[in-house]
Image (cartoon, helix red, strand yellow):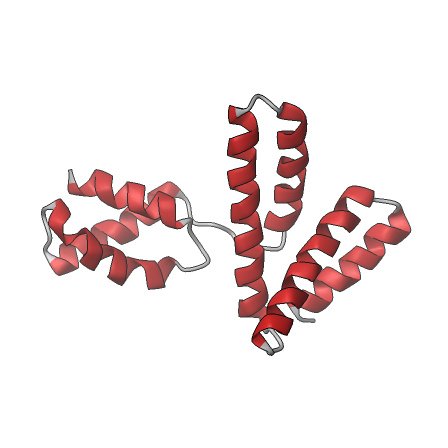
Length: 147
């Protein structure tokens, strides 16, 4: 079963169970997937669906930060619930320690000591962690290692 089929199946199950929160979140995700398919005139495979899910999760994280800055915990809670549902369909994200280990290996391999090699390191590291780690976190870890 593909990831898109799993999402559709789970949305049906949420409807039957009366879980409105999960149903609505999965509807939004499936609509985003459909929008990408229509815009690009393609049928997304699991990797494409995962990319859409990652983008949706990132949007939720940004919204949570904005709502918390504005002291709107009610809206932040809604976004957190949606984020939890979306993340349940994403592959397990790498921990900070795992990212640090990979980054240290790339830095040693390229023999870079200063921040001027940041672009080279990120260029080599990002394909290895694509879909498994947040780019902002990877950037933060690399900066720490270079200091």
